Image 1: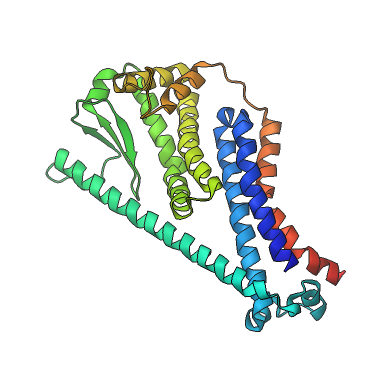
Image 2: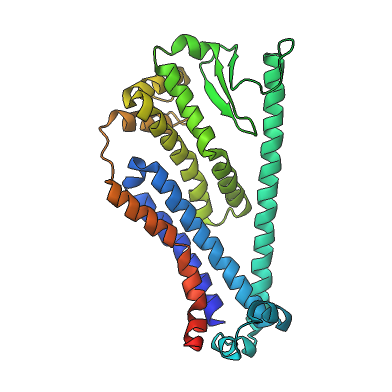
Length: 311
C-alpha cells in the first residue's frame, strides 16, 4: 500500500499547494491562456493520482484485478509493489475512490444535461422574442439582433454557436466597440470555453468540501473572460474593448462602491487600460511545458517500483 498512499499524498499536496501558488502569482492575469492550461494540468494531476491509487489498491485487494493490471508483468514487478501482502485498507481505499469516480461521472453527466436543457430553454425564448421569418431555418444565422432595453451581448453555445446582441447595445456601442464585443464572444465560441466551465462546475458541485475544485471553477470563470478580452484586443485594441465594457456595464452599478454582481468587470477594464507586461515567448513556452508535465508526476510515482524490479 506504499505506492497508493504516496499517490494520495501527492494528489492532496497538489490540491493544497498549487492553488495557493497560483493565487499569489501575478502572471495569470497577464497570460490567462497559459493559466488556463496550468489549472487544467493541476486538476488533471489530482484526478490522475486518485485513479492510479484506486487501480493499485484494487490490485492489492483482489487477485482478479491484479491479474488484469499486472498480467503481462513478471512476478518481481508484483513483488516490488507488495501487492501480494493484501493490506486490509486496500479494499476500503479502492471502493471509496471508485465511489468518488462514479460520483464525478454522475456530476459531469448532470452538468451536461443541465446545460443542454438551459440551452434549449434559451433558444426557445429567443424564438419567442425573435420569431423566424418565412423560409428561414433555425440556426441559419450566427448573429441575432434582439429587441431589448438593456445593452448586452452574449453567445449561445451548441453545435451551431449563435451570437446575440440587443438593440440597446447597438445604440450604446460606438464605432469599432461593437466589433470588439462580438470578437470577444467569438473568442469564447472558438475556444469552447463552455466545456471548461461545465467541467469545473461539475467538480465544484460534486465535491464542495474540496477547495481546489471550488478555486478551479472560480478561476475558470475569471480567466476565460480575460482570455476572450485578449483575443478581441489583438484585433481592435485594448482601449476599444475597455470602452466597450464600460458602455455595456455602466448602468448596472458595477463600478460604484459596494458593487458585487459583476465585480470582475472593473478589474478587466483596469487590466486592459494598464500597459501589458507579458511574459516573453521563451518563458511562456517553458511555463506551458512545465504545466503539461505536471500530470506525468503521478505516473512516475506509480511506475518507479516496477522499473526498479525490472532493473
